[in-house]
Image 1 (cartoon, rainbow, N blue to C red):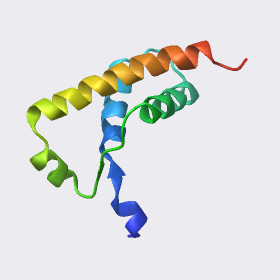
Image 2: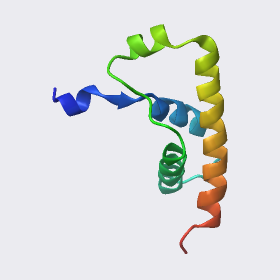
Image 3: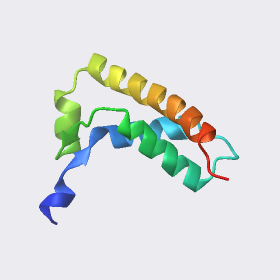
Length: 87
């Protein structure tokens, strides 16, 4: 394993969860990938090496806030991508 593979952004998982929670039948993989990129670009990075460490040191209120921010970022990203789709 490379050191590059040892670091992850915690918001990636939260954004994926938010996308899955708001997924619609007409959503294409390309559309969802664009939504994910836009949402992640609007959130601060939160890097970690081990998921267990992140979950252990993260307060419940902080995690709830991060989930709420992720859901809001995904909703806004959906609107942005829909309004700026190439035809």
